[in-house]
Image 1 (cartoon, rainbow over the protein chains, first blue to last red):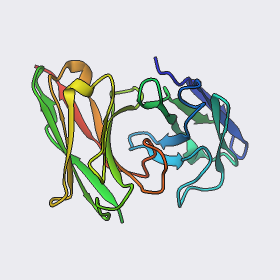
Image 2 (spheres, chains in turn green, blue; image 1 turned 120 degrees about the vertical axis):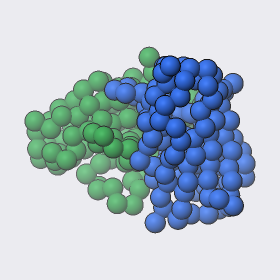
Image 3 (cartoon, rainbow over the protein chains, first blue to last red; image 1 turned 135 degrees about the vertical axis):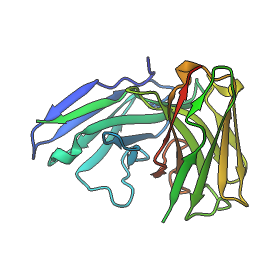
Length: 110
Length: 123
């Protein structure tokens, strides 16, 4: 059971927008920056968002991140079939004194 | 171009010590802020962070696994090594190493990952 809670699944239709949530607490999301990863089937994770809302070079601006208090969200607009993947949030936890990953959300493009 | 590649045994017996090597290229481990981390993923399960070593030899470990882990670097060989003692079947997972860029500002933002190596723990 992760200290970060993500919905196990999400879905959307091509071209539309979907959001994935990550809920934590004051010791993690509430006091540290959050990061998001995309993991395509059988592949290594890929950094999508760092420092709450920054995109590494090469990540399309269809992906955006936001944070409010002890929760964070990843939004994907203009949904594409290639976006089908697992998405993980990750943040440092001050109480655990270590980073934690969320349990992951499987995104299905209908 | 930054690349990382994990290597090590694919099968270890319970109670044995696992040694994994991450061989990297395309960046200097002497650059301020740079780090290399290890993360694992049991089959069908979520990611689990293990350890991180920084350019200045600052080392961080998963609190729940700290007593079993050691991370070291050999800059002359462009390698980072992770050892995990007292292996158990629950440690069966794909083990990844990843690059922590100097710009990330977070202990857990890794921009380049290796392909991963599957380790099975079984007698």
